[in-house]
Length: 395
Image (cartoon, rainbow, N blue to C red; front, side, top):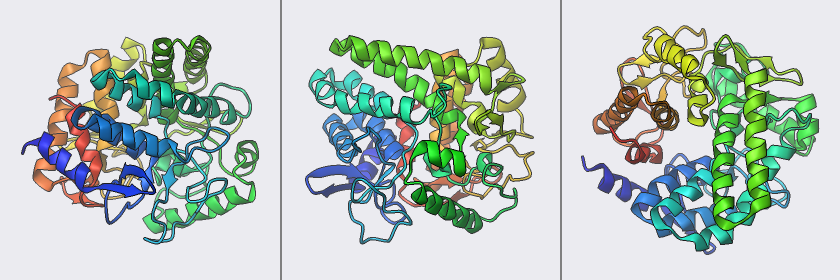
């Protein structure tokens, strides 16, 4: 398979136009809207293939930014396709929550492939305001850890990391979990999505991948600000990247591994998920800690290693389901984060393996949403765009 051409064909086939904006749907049948971190993945790949399309995707993503700086996790460009369970507030046609803040990284990828400083100057105020919102509004106690108010904000809707703060049993069904998240969304609406109220009364998680992605992106934001001569923004991004980095090590590191935390005291959620690997992306582990992580979990067939990739949930967890959406199967976004984290630490052999098995999954099953780690069987949405991330993972 020519992955470059196949990826280009898929992204073009999933491209949509609406009210003067161009964007890419993750899957025409299952996900017919625009999603925040999905668009960032599209931009990262399109920067290599069609930079102008990448810029258009970024402009579209930022076009419905809220007044407080938040970028909603969904834009319903065609709301008649099906009725979403939350149509949002503040900006008609969007959701009311956000998603992992990968925007600065995506914008920098465009610049790396184009040297076009013009679009950075144009979009920088919106990008910076988004990170100021995440840093300030999502940290109601000023502990330097960003909070999510709903599991959907993690991008991993039914991950067992969130079972305890939602008071759910590990054997809950897919639809049972969806029902509970809809109840939580209704509760979020009652508190008008005000973070300090929603976290105090309903759901409050300092998620490891979310904060690791935030740190990496604040560092990239500082690079962009330096390039543009935005000295105050550069100082802001650098300062808060360091503060969050220190806070994660102080509050979320236990026994050499990072765990998500909940509540005002950051009570650790001791569920083994791929989130243990996410801090590699932001260089949060010491080399000794990273070595131990790779030895004890990356190569361990009883926890995360499988012939088809890295499980999203440890096989030892009672919540583990090899076909359970975010409760065990292999996904390309975690593979992409793990790949770049491994490369940053010099684990080239392990990174090459991640890239290779990712390509093999597509060659065997096509561009599908997620994969059974025990059998390699593909599940979920067809024509799903995350597989195009293999272009940003060299074997």
